[in-house]
Length: 200
Ligand SMILES: [Zn+2]
Image (tube, rainbow, N blue to C red):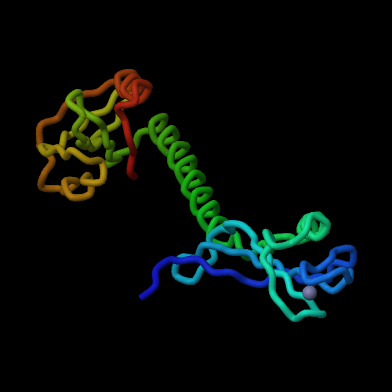
């Protein structure tokens, strides 16, 4: 199975009226055909990687590469090449990647807003994911809300990766011991980057 590769597609052809063929003196017999190569992954075009041209003469019926052309024909080709645009579909993969990154950034901004809102209005059973001093991750759960503080139960378990939180955020892992945290203490943890997420 081919996962990735590159392929060329024909972009544009044109007669070069002012160019001479390497075969002789007559002008206007050369046709340039420009091909654009692109990288594809799973058949989705990712991005273009340059253009190449082939030249054909109507008089001698021979094909030529650019380096075989005379200076006048090279110049005529250069002018023509300037008019050949790379079609947008060749950027499909890059566009998809940009959209995914954009969605990721958007959802991360939305999550940050949510965290700030939950911080300001704590509620029963809010679950805070936090980083420990030794760079582990764990959680605590709010069990009671007061004016300036909350009561919490700490998770007895830690994980070395934040993605492991889901595995340890289980009811049976929470200690029944109650700790008091002032709103200011939680705010200060947040300001120092220790609060990673809040789930409600
Ligand atoms: Zn020719």
